[in-house]
Image 1 (spheres, one colour):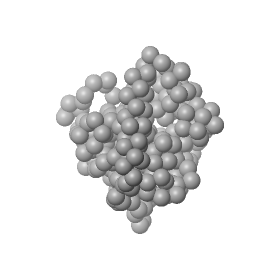
Image 2 (cartoon, one colour):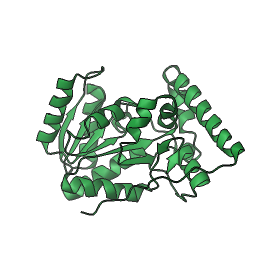
Image 3 (cartoon, helix red, strand yellow):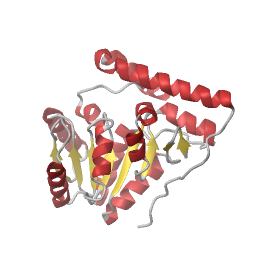
Image 4 (tube, one colour):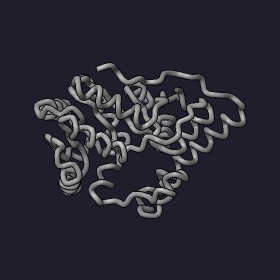
Length: 258
């Protein structure tokens, strides 16, 4: 469903999990991004990023304001958002139960080590078939090819990308046809589950105030992001509201048949 030029999928957590695991079981390459306000407004400013989002199989409504907007203008009736960090755990749980291998790509080496140790402790039956911290710069074509070879050789069915927006979305679309797995752009989930950054209290998440909690924790790094993205999002919503128009319906991603 079109939301400010981005095709956001009308689906809740259960539906998205079902799609991810159905693709992972049959080794179908796919891409999933968990979309918050920051990514949504970045697409409004960056045509290339917006083009890439149109290539994703699922653009899930990660942010509460994104869910509210879908319900307001599309009557989506989504009772909850599809929160990337929580979906990371749900996918790990399902992958452990079904024997699907997972690969973690992104983050700093120390964060990645803590993340995989904690995930392995929480899901002892989970097959973590690989984890790597890429260079903090644009990768060359050869480096992208080598990363795809390593991931495919691991036998991973799911690849978690924790490189931040927009790096992870660029990687996922560039590697769409090269990686034989479901790529999940999960953003800050690596830092959260590694214990490097605390998650906002549940009541703040439900109230759409997670951004404020994170801003208070990391003001120097995040003030500009939230000032720009929140301002643009509010402006876009006001424009639509005052214009009295609904967004035209677009596509809704359906889980594949296995």
